Image: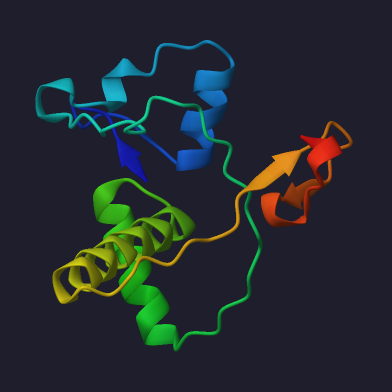
Length: 128
């Protein structure tokens, strides 16, 4: 649950999304005095992130602890896991840099307009 700044209202993340989508004022649920600015893409280009659904089996006590942390931060379980995984991946990249391990380059995808993403490595010269 996400609690308003005055502590009088509570909504779920899904309800907050719906309120925002409907154009309702949701500012009472955000503490702008303690907000953090997330740095943007360093080269200033717009990036489209493709997602892939995965299945993950975890012990119930671990799920309960994740849910508790998500609730404390006003996030969802999925959002919390996504955040933790990103944080860990960044730490691993920093460690690799310190150790001199070359970075892993993942293929970048391009949408040719048919809705089917194609890895850049599979594009022919005439496709570009």
